[in-house]
Length: 240
Image (cartoon, rainbow, N blue to C red; front, side):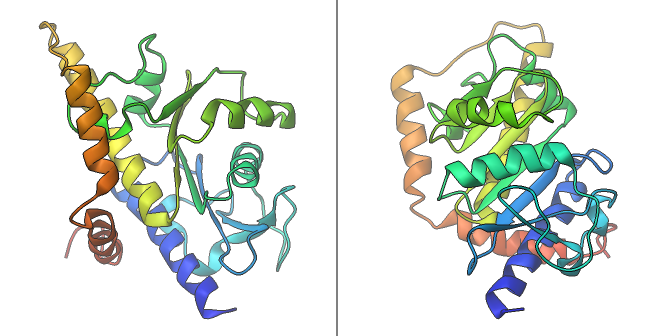
């Protein structure tokens, strides 16, 4: 195994543990995948049946874009994970990492007709950069893949209607940051709507300016954030 592959495995295993740590896992369901740096036609993904907090660099399976396991012992792989993740990686050369969750907040917002609202600076990270995909049942049918990638387009995030959230990153750290912030935006929206008070939205001009500020990332926050998160991933769950 090359040094580059081991580094990718370590980052991906850390992302799984962080998803669990922040309460965004769903027992053994949902999935995160990453493209191997030296073999871009191959993907790393979790072994179906592992809790996210149990995922290690060594436990990750290697599959191709057809969902076939290419190395080592054959292990169970979530069929929906294969359908969703192979489609996105195959369609998007920039998709180094793809994350998918079923959180209560994410699923709740996916059920709202208006979807994600531009309520605050967290949600404005996704202003004009989020797709929507209609629910077609559990994602087991390869025929859904074409529609899924068409709905994603070149966006970095997508809300799967009546289902959950999906993010696409040029690195594992970017995909995680997008998912964390999308989850937070959904939680904030539900809290604001649940207050029963009138909702105040920023102007379109401010929304566009804020989105462009995020895109510029003048302080290099994304890289610093992932370094901090990697430290957190190595800590016991009780923080001691």
